[in-house]
Length: 402
Length: 227
Ligand SMILES: Nc1ncnc2c1ncn2[C@@H]1O[C@H](COP(=O)(O)OP(=O)(O)OP(=O)(O)O)[C@@H](O)[C@H]1O
Ligand SMILES: [Mg+2]
Image (cartoon, rainbow over all chains, first blue to last red; front, side, top):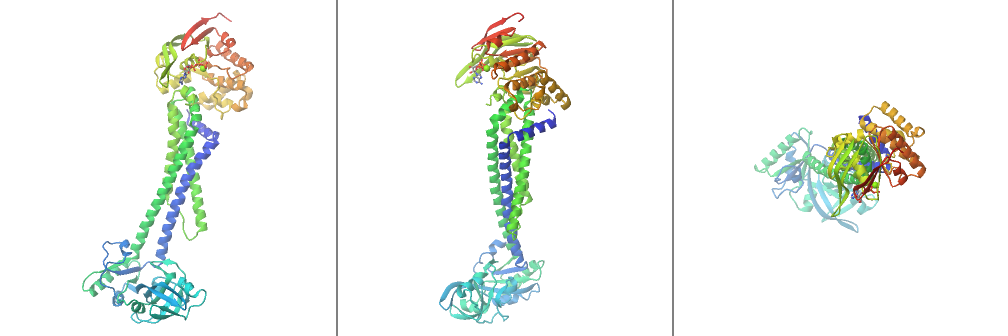
């Protein structure tokens, strides 16, 4: 048989059975589109989160008391083992490194806050005015903590937007006195709403000067110290400086952990990489489902096709020629289905990007390639297998449609 | 030209064996006109299928033009069918998506003939079966008799030596049946060997040689003189 006759006959039978053809195309297209959409969601979320973290300030180092057992960011997320506390003096000492531009010590605890009749347990964060820059927070009302020495306490506080609404509803809280535990503080500012940025949910915080917070919790140490390096490149050197300075201050014992944001970022990268892979797995399952659908469509059509194969054999077609005919047909169908699926999937991700411009939904190339590959292979396989069975029959059997 | 020696065709149905052909010996010369009759289930179709290489014998030997074809592989069998055999089915077996012309062309397409040549040949053949006005009609746009004539065209387009017809008029009214018979008799007069399976004694009577089958055996083989 001539090549263009083969391709013409294959194309004719595609047109001849519109229901079977459209179901097959649909099955393949849905499988491919599912892969594109699911991996686009995973990738988009991953890039969104990494992007958000990067926006927080890429030069951030976090100093924790205690030596983490394993290197890497994940351990840094845990509270270090009991060790010598970090102090405000340690924080001040870190600033001696020429590679550190800003530091912000952090004390965290919970306290009972009240204003008039309202009261509630809240998270109290003790820090310095530098924190505003270090965390890239913005103010909604008033101002942030005053520029006073770290060890000086002051009866003022800044609150998150959520706290403000709970205590003051819509009213202006600036100048009001909030009671926290045994002390009172005057509200001087409200943070702009930002949700969870970094480790804190700023909406639900009350922020005090670090010395005031230490007094409130009766603590001498600090929970952690945030340090901003002069540049991204100087981060490893800054990290070494910090360890060196603190080790010297702690009688030669290296009992701190310095986590860079890179480590945090790469942890998130890993996690989201895994999520993307998991979504890819789900997508693979949807491809498998599509494959089974393809198989069913093919099997339903097979008795009809079996007769046709019997006739072709009776007219002198060889087994190999019939197979070639079906391979050609399956190639047409699965390639067309895959292209359709890619188009649908990418239209879908385009729609998602339009609806949620904040997130860059885009399927990775590998996922699209794998989707097309698997779709074409399963289309071929399930297109050819039944035909192969029929092509082996003697013409009488095939003509009888058995 | 065609010779069967002790040919059997058994079918396994459950744990029973049906002897559809039971040690059949038969010699058919070139140009013969043979009718095959017998009760339903006597093995007529099975015999025709074997002769047409659509089926294989369980045992025995089939010589086609002095070549033993009982144990050929798939591609050799395909070539033999293509070159030597024309087959007409009771239910036509046309491809519904193809026009009359394309259906007739199909064996030439499978044989890899160049488009121009095969188109001309297919027209010629459709002309011979009286369908030159129906070239572009699809099977569902043709009457039963016309469909069977397309099928005849397709069977003879490769100029085979033998034309095998299994109840070719079974699905037709008597008028179109007669037309079909006249066409294949004309082909026989032009030299093709013709075997017709039929239940119709009138049609069977027109052949020059009459085979009668019963229980998988040929129980009658008579010749009449010129009709
Ligand atoms: N594929 C098959 N499987 C099992 N048995 C079969 C098969 N084909 C034919 N037979 C049996 O073989 C015997 C002969 O069948 P065949 O079709 O040759 O009869 P026939 O003479 O053509 O009958 P009819 O006049 O009804 O067409 C029957 O008993 C039939 O049941
Ligand atoms: Mg029969």
